[in-house]
Image 1 (tube, rainbow, N blue to C red):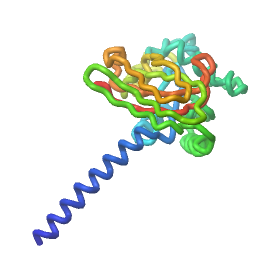
Image 2: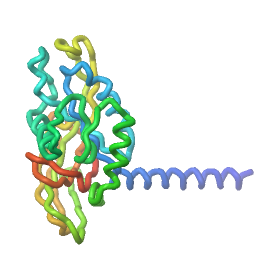
Image 3: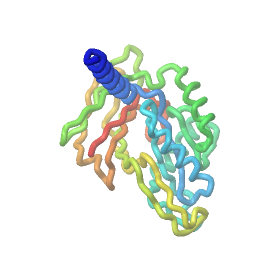
Length: 248
């Protein structure tokens, strides 16, 4: 009886360790970066905001909320919006050549856009983009101390030019909306990007970047997403690598 109990305890510990390792590996090598362009003034957006919260619970997905500002004129000024997000969304459309800019819009791995409230379409976009050469092929390693976040990007034989960005994010932001199309609703926005910080450029050689933790804690940010992306800030391309880390 004691032997059976001891064996069960050992198996439980092994299973826990295996789960922890698998989770760590999933965060280091995600299968998707899902960017949701949303607005507090958009009546179609709350289902997408809720879905992003569910996707954020998946350790293989880096889900980011990027509130835009071009619906502010409808009667409610989005409290989380950044002009940078609106410009990024338009940059994606310009890069794709389709001029498709709307809310709620999801861009998957910097390559494909779908309706932000359609989970099936998001999953299909994840699967299709993962078959494209280069997308999330870099095993980005992120570590941090109390004072500094460090990003290690490996070398690859056929690496092209890319930019390395750190995004300060807040995991959950509840907002009560007093006017506009969502008047009277309280909506929780998940993994809200509060700030973009360029760490540098990458050209295929192994490289290490670092940033003070204090620079990532703007406006209540408690985590950081790191993305290596082709193109430029004005015309963003596909995601070559990404990672997520807590900074609180």
